[in-house]
Image (cartoon, rainbow, N blue to C red; front, side, top):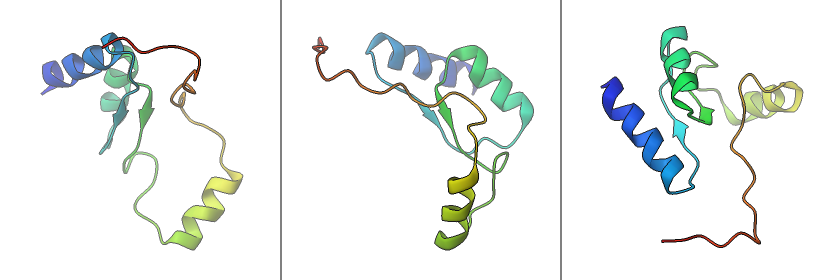
Length: 80
């Protein structure tokens, strides 16, 4: 499974796309994703599913734990 995930992250980088890992549950999974260059994460390691009002409060006061996706550059042409 790690080989597949690493390949997908590398492919996203080659295509100049961001990558988001879903279902991150352990520190070792996060460490692997960080080492692979994955840019964003979500899962039980950070928070269980929450009702909308609770997640809104959480996000309003939260500080980023890991780097977020880079903002797209609207002036940079994408090659296909």
